[in-house]
Image (cartoon, helix red, strand yellow):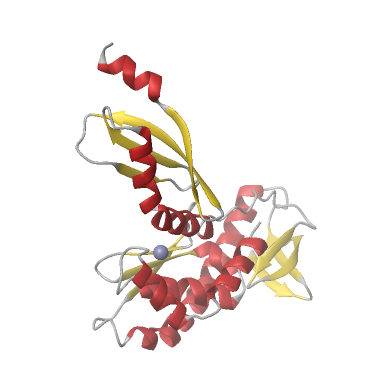
Length: 245
Ligand SMILES: [Zn+2]
């Protein structure tokens, strides 16, 4: 039997039990020396083992990495905005700082967005010009995000004083798959979508990213720091996920 056909025969879904958790993983074999594990944003796990490794041996090794795998899955789950696409029609609800507002479209020569009495009113020359309405709203959200993110960021930076000497930099942009990110140069990016979430959720994401100034991974040490700076982060994270559906 050729190695290639052996590989095909043995490729597929496997699982291990870790406490009360079952971890399923896709197993592949490749010419390599050690076992590789990848966790994807959709929470799937891929294990790549050296050719001819015994399955029990592989499962044993995956078990020793189980806590790490669960941490990675947990992280991806919490940073996955799943807001359905909006149609930009009157009456549709849009969130701003966690509260729901009804979209009201008004025809006017002077274009802009105003918030009042439970409505987000968009003034636009042509009520049927959906791309224009979307752009006006996005510009308004971005403007509000800029104000709130900067204020919260400045308030929270002192939390990082004990473990980060430099001055972290805040940037923001629209992102599809993440609430925030932090790079090794101390630049923190926040997803502009966060302006739709309650203030405490924005604070939580900022604190999460500040913790990355000390630990760029999601190691146990990272979570220890996060627990210390934001003891209720789990319930806040749950709220963020629930609200942003
Ligand atoms: Zn993170």
